[in-house]
Image 1 (cartoon, one colour):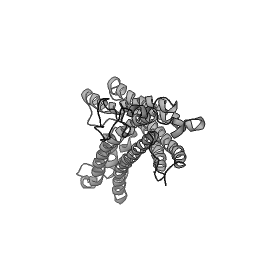
Image 2 (tube, helix red, strand yellow; image 1 turned 90 degrees about the vertical axis):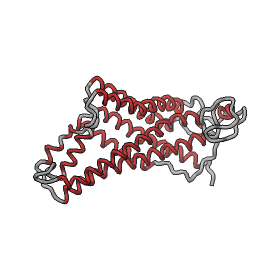
Image 3 (cartoon, one colour; image 1 turned 120 degrees about the horizontal axis):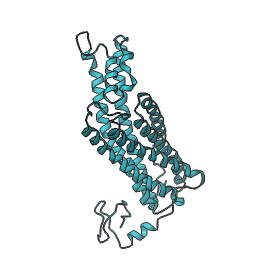
Image 4 (tube, one colour; image 1 turned 60 degrees about the vertical axis):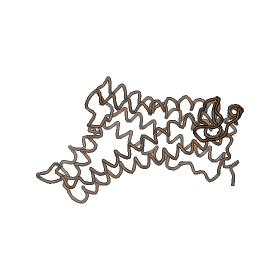
Length: 308
């Protein structure tokens, strides 16, 4: 049975939902199945279907990228993947594949329910809730990305303390080269370009801003995926019969901005020779762009029946 209040699956013989505490009746499941059709809540007909199709394409590319992640790490010795410099063994490559398989699993679930939403098949509220598994997982992984971003920012900021003729690095630009090589982007060959550059305020500022950009990107990703996750939950509740609040603010602009940034990252990845990351980044770009496009359409339609 499905709880009408929070959409979690629960046992048929319970009297209240263990997740949200809502009192249940024997007709709860029938009420869920009687919720409005997709056209009544989310219009997926005609041109309105396009953002859902692009969402499907984006999620498929994400899944394909993480499948290629396994292939490249196990069959190609890590070639084509931006693995950390700490991952040098087969065990390390397998371990990182297993960790990222959580995203792969979430993407596969999202593919199934994206098709159901697009074709108006099954219960809409439940399909949206299941699709939302992917944004929830991406939100969790972005927390770890923020930790990485903080470490990178810290290393880039203190780089000035290890610069000198008898010290580790000749100038602060080396911080940028060192970081890019350690995160798997040695193919950019930055080190050769910076040897002719002189140290100074510009070098220090460049290193700090470089590190700050990693931290900022991961923080914004965490914020965006969280907003997407929350908005999909709102749509699931609306499809389940809840009144839509016109003051809801889906992350439209930020979705488009991040989609553009992911395109830039994909280009950099291709230049560096990490084609697996490029596939994932292109998939993320299409997924986020399609989300922003869909949010515009859905929010406009639902505002017409929203509460004051």
